[in-house]
Image (tube, rainbow, N blue to C red):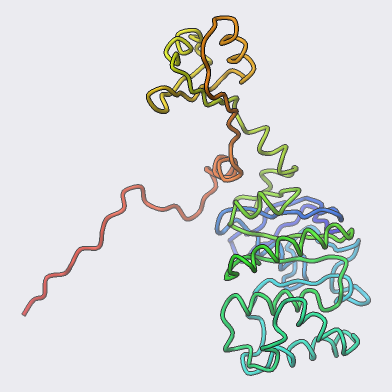
Length: 313
């Protein structure tokens, strides 16, 4: 279990994490979301003891990581996939960790095989692609067979097979009763991987709830209707709370009433309906709505194409 209590971290006058309190429960994959600069990586670094909190606490299994008796067997983390000496081989990197944690030598080969790096185990890690480095970072996190796993942007650099493997891996770890805490900017992956979400912005907590509850609570009643009598359906619902937007010659998106209400009205009036599909907001929609006021780095709305400079003589 991971817990933060009123956690605050300042760098000079800059507050990176601001009075943050949450709990990451075992047995679930908990996603950690926030826009760039929200304080996610700093929070993870404080949890792992790489940074000291300005105020408040961050604990794993009730203790700060620096006080754990056998840290590698209790918490494993990959906060930067290239946190290795570039001239060490993957095997040497893991061997050094195993020696530090008094782990059996056979564990090195086990994790190398698990992450798919056996064939390149004796190559210098500095030559690895980002995807290979990411796999080595995950091996680093798992070498102690820890009860708690923390991964910062672990999907970056992985190919489709690697993404699927990682998704199944973290869900498998959670299924074994472990605590799994991971951040990502890939909303589609978080929607498929995480059970619970913690969202922060400008260092503050914005949401702490299950994926299903978050999406459901943020989704207005919205239905796609396809019917040759879609105009009559639009005339039926004239309440100010109902909005109807054309979605093709014989289709519309109806917001503000339920799919059942539209179906009941169609049956009562004898309208032909070819399609009646409820539309739920995506996790990306919910995330953008939650964080729209706390985005530190915002792209310009009017992008300009680079202009070709005229050569002067």
